[in-house]
Amino acid sequence: MSTPKNPLEMVDRYLQAVRFWLPNTRRQEDLLAELGEDLRSQIEDKEGELGRALDKDEISEILKRCGAPMVVASRLGPKRQLIGPTLYPIYTFVLKMVVLWILVPAFLFIVGLVNLANSNGDWGKAIVATMGGLWSAAFIAAGVITLVFAILERTHAIADIACKWDPSSLPPLEKSERKKSLFQTNCELVFNIFGFVWLLLIPHHPFLVFGPASAFLGIGPIFHDFYLPFVLLAAAVIVRLVVMLARPQWRAFALGSQIAQAVATLVLVNAILNAAGHPSADWHPFVTVANTLRGTDKYTQFVKIAAIVNVSILISFVGTWIGVSIAGSIQTWEFLKYIRKQRISHEPASLQVQ
Amino acid sequence: MCATYYMTNGSTGPNELFENLKLELRRGCLTLAVLTQLRTERYGYTLRKALADDGLEIDEGTLYPLLRRLESQGLLVSQWREEDKRNKRFYRLSPDGEQILGQLLTEWQRINESLNKILQEA
Image (cartoon, rainbow over the protein chains, first blue to last red):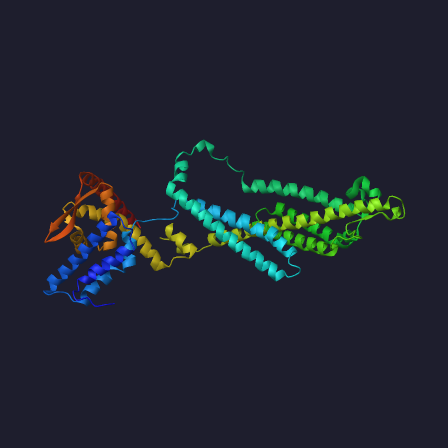
């Protein structure tokens, strides 16, 4: 930095540096002129006190006390918020909805699976591609949402709508969480008991699965292999629901056991899908053609029907896997929220202002 | 409540929290002090000096935008005038400002009395 011959020139240089960061408006010029006048008055006062002209260092001290040009400009300049306090809660809500509830599930359960299917066994590459895509999509979505809200902020569109709100349009009161969850648990228990009994009867009464088609279709090998884990899982679900009804206050158990159930279901479905393998010419993992029909005229036709049923069951298992994964993610999110809430409610009271 | 919020979120340390609360406390007081001082016409630097002499320091970056805001709200009137061969902007309270200042001072007295009462009870 060059040393000025006239130390007062530093004030002009300082003002010029502040001006650089300010919009070129009359109001700002006015403020700068006032700031300049203030600084000159300070110098003049100090000179009167000392009985001599100030040197470069003394002027520099006054400017330093005033603050760095950029900081001073930020205080003098117009106060602007990209998204103001009125829109901010809506903005964060929309952002969370789009990123956490749309993009993340879509990438995990649709794009991710497609990438895995096309990866030819290179899972690492598929995961990196999915995560990369998710990052780009989240980045673009966040940018677009921010832009839209910034426009809404400038045009006061939401504020106008908010002014016209009608109290009679408020949604009705929701039923209490406990009542809703008790009703839900009761229904779940009844359906699960029916399901459990149905499951126990299947080995001896295939009619319960195939209906009239049980005359030519039989239960496949996978059903026998995974029958016991299925029965155990169904029994565990009933025990869980009974505990939830007996101890409705055990919220952590309700949430935790739900996740455990989802994980167990996923493991089981995954094992079934692995055991089933890929559809091929002689592929009958879930449903087979009754042995009594071998060698008859219609055997080939029944094999075709069995193949269609097998593929349908395979697709339904894949659907179940996706559904349970989404449900498990939501349940895990609920569980984390619950833990966080519990932790906050247990904060020591001493942190509060007296 | 604010303090509880900051503490439980753990994002603000005690010093920063104190500074934030002090700023909030000062904001309204500064407006009242500036309006009161401007019952007599002054320009920026002398106003700052008068406030500092009474123990209320205010930096340039805070005072001048505050003066602009009060002027745009119709509480102050200002005028550029030459004094000692330099152009200075002089401020004084407008008639509306005088009326509002009277109301604000009454409110201030009421708050002050309540606060004193609360502090004595505590």
